[in-house]
Length: 304
Length: 232
Ligand SMILES: Nc1ncnc2c1ncn2[C@@H]1O[C@H](COP(=O)(O)OP(=O)(O)O)[C@@H](O)[C@H]1O
Ligand SMILES: [Mg+2]
Image 1 (cartoon, each protein chain N blue to C red):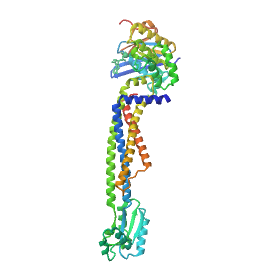
Image 2: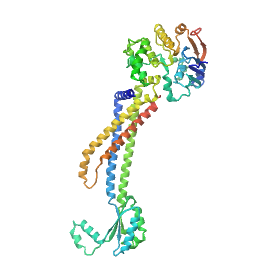
Image 3: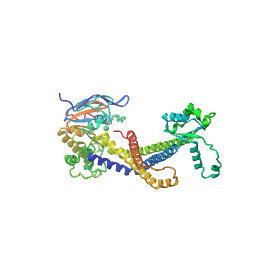
Image 4: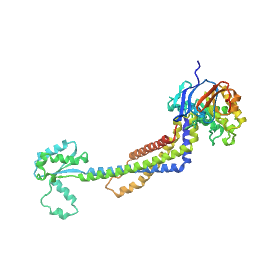
């Protein structure tokens, strides 16, 4: 087997040199498509981290009317906690609410000073395990009798609830569009890379048609004849993948710290494990593209 | 009864409907025979050879080589059939960028033979065909006869039980052709079954071997110790 590996490698390198323009085209398109895959993955991670940090802040606030009975509040709290959509329930008393308001309004002391009577209602702050279920949970709460009894405005229970459904919706719509655009671009580039590889392999087959004829004649096995071409396709893709990984690592090292400086309040960090995973994905995607492109060419242009 | 090395029964080959390139071919060739396949250009000789190589499949009929039905042979097994059938052609089919040695070695290399086997068998077979002095020559430094010897060496280096040749002397002068034919004879003496397609009348007549004559795809004569033919 040792001679075979040497033979295949020699043949592939020779082919690459013979059709270097096409081969370079193949490497560059693969590089670009894998780079795009990598960048979308990195962006995906950053965006989902941002979404996560926003989601953490999405909660349902239930405003309670003044003087609501403690046992009713506790009953509502217990009922909420028993629901599996609910993560935590936090009781905020009128005093706490005022305190919070004063803190937030510390920049405008004239407003704070003018408050005589406490106008703020007490509330239950509810966080959910999955923020996408906000709407559903709100519906359930509205149908709850205890809620209707002790909510701040029993005439319009809707007004006693505050939640961030719209933020969540908009973020999800945004990430969905980004993902879709990414997928379309990657698919287009993948097709272009396949066409390039297909062409280089076709040329390689053409320039070696004599050798192939003799190999068939003397009984070289079909896989022996195909292997150098498959290997060539894979080598081109791996070269593209390696370049893409290097680029992403370099850009990450140069750009991320600055980005983090610019947007302090958001997490834009990428774990090392994530980079390894990314490199693996690109290498595997490269090998698949290489094998597919070469495979198509072999099916069409190499009769064994 | 000895099993035939090559057995063709009711073989027909149509490239286009209603025009058989071969029809009603029934032939048995024993192991170790030397057979000439003669006929005008277009009579079906190459088709006959290519059927045995399994380059082509017959439209009808059975082809059995060494007990193996090659028509029903799975595609992936075809290379292993071809390792047992050496082939020589009119145009030599040598790789121009390889020396005689490398051309012959290539045939062993691509079927996965070890370096050791290649280093011993290639010089041996080149000596057999009389090219021990031309091992490092490239095809364009060799005469036609020498190039054909390289191609015979390549066909025979793996010691196949069958050697097929399609017009092997078609590009060579009579004296050189004689040398090539005697080389086939030597190879046949080692026990190899040899089938040579040719329209070289003098050659066939001088050798007095079995002659199968084709005309318009039909076998018109099958004669032991035969000659090329009568008339024309
Ligand atoms: N690939 C092909 N397609 C169509 N017809 C063919 C093909 N090859 C050979 N033929 C026809 O089959 C007949 C036999 O050809 P061939 O076997 O090459 O004869 P020979 O080798 O004796 O000259 C001829 O009439 C030829 O035109
Ligand atoms: Mg012919």
